Image 1 (tube, rainbow, N blue to C red):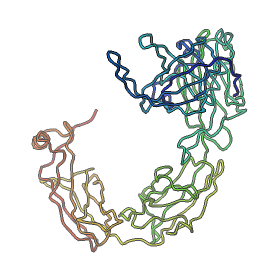
Image 2 (image 1 turned 45 degrees about the horizontal axis):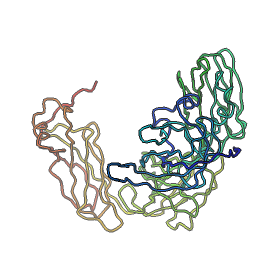
Image 3 (image 1 turned 120 degrees about the vertical axis):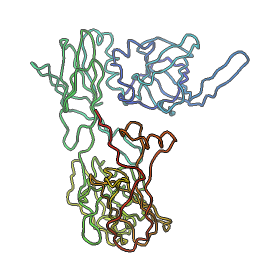
Image 4 (image 1 turned 120 degrees about the horizontal axis):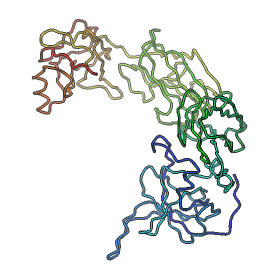
Length: 477
């Protein structure tokens, strides 16, 4: 949205805060409430950014620390000409780092003691490209403040591998339905993805957007008196001359799913897969998932682009992933990986991955018991190697079933120990004086006597004993 430059410029000192979402803040003010509360509302461009350190000058102390931005004011909606205004903010992670050339809409507040201005992190100050709804209201003043107003914006965000969760586009020409249960109003988003409707009678309204083809609704951000939220709609309340804002965020409705099979043709549970952009290397947790007990996986909400699938991203060989990094359809050489070109609404199924070869493993099975022979249900059993070759992860962990039974798949050839462990939490067990005594001594967990072994074959019938008799767990309300 282009702004007409007003011949009014003054140096502003601003600090760098990040845009904070409504959930982290516990909710934003509506546009009309933010305008009423702020002492100055204006559009300005960042001309220079400086770091400000605490200073001590005789009896005068300036303990402020953060980033300071010099801003040229381009349009004032409230507050008049304030040459020499200073805006400050602490340099915490909730504050954005301003960059030269950025254009912002500021809701500013004045501190008489320090004669400086500030921006509230959970208010509506925003980059100009994120302020279309606010600007519609501000540019229509004073008439926009004389009647009810329901408004918001529809945007598409994608989980970009470089920029993170980033706005991809404004959604233009999308229908939004507003209903009080008796009458339904239909409005459409403009070229900035914003919609607005004035003059609705005071009452409760359900706001529901159409879902654009190929997209899914991800988030609903609500501002104002909220009645409830259900499905893809949001219920809000309007009072006389009040306003409410509802924003909707969409992402691509895309996915790739299939199964992972080992070299022996059996499904492989618990292996983890990562989607990687063609020609780029990004963090393995950018877009990933792990296969379930049947070896099934699904990668969802994939931004349009070209990708490869990699199993065991870091390449370390372990009991769950007894093979190096492997690429779809089942090759160790990244250059031979098949490329997926994902567009809106693509849902690829039966994309099965076959691991070409893998290290041998052995199954170690047994039971975890109290000293009196009672089984220990739903507790930890682990294998810890004495040493593991470079590029290997030898540790394996599992949980016992209701009968205290455990099963571990361990890489063949490793030497180590198998042991059980119970973490002691206050009040978790009843009539367990020995456990409480250990906890009082600062012992965080009780371990069984370990069993030492070299894994050369399958082993069954192992028994691990805790040095304490059975104790019942306290019932949770």
